[in-house]
Length: 263
Ligand SMILES: C[S@@+](CC[C@H](N)C(=O)[O-])C[C@H]1O[C@@H](n2cnc3c(N)ncnc32)[C@H](O)[C@@H]1O
Image (cartoon, rainbow, N blue to C red; front, side, top):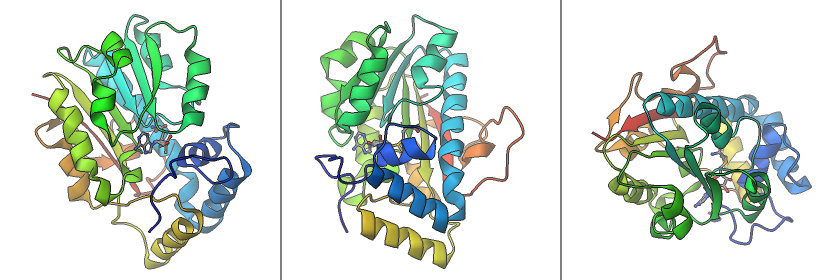
């Protein structure tokens, strides 16, 4: 299997951040990214639903964390800026709250850097989640995040881009271990249980052809990210079913989402 997201993130090959940007109607993407997204749209009925299910869950989760009193946010695998970014939701509620974005894709980082240059209390870090120490101990993180106080850690459609051999559970554990009581973890991840044989074959083929590996995981593996945390109501559910704030279309069944709080 090819490794996920090639390290150089070259513009001549597709990258998950930019495929996702195109899928959300963004314009910060290139032809290779658009080709992959269009193939997925044409061949997988759920593909058009997923980015919106994901992004809406993210915003509802952030609002929930704000209501719970969280005032510092670490968004790991933030992607490219789009509509309703985390810092916009957060600063809409409290301009003094802090947000650190992290992505290993330099294009995503450059775009956030441009967007945030005049925004106090928010920054972006170019780092790889598979090296949690480089994030947790980074001076920019220390400047904005006090790990002795509750923090909201967002891993939204990011862990499914970390293959099993890179141990996504160890990645999450490293962040969980540093979180103070009252901290929250929000995860949205690809679930492997509702794909037909045909959909699975198409997904595998797209991965083989394009080299952007997404690992669909069983429910128990996704639940494992919340070890030692209490899942807030309604627990781990399809993304649109997590505390909906308006009527929603039938869920794709491909994205499982939840929020856990550290006791
Ligand atoms: C599908 S996008 C999701 C963006 C955003 N979290 C959202 O939900 O709107 C996934 C992002 O995770 C990033 N990513 C994947 N693996 C990563 C890693 N090991 N370290 C940091 N970022 C990573 C990708 O570059 C991409 O921008």
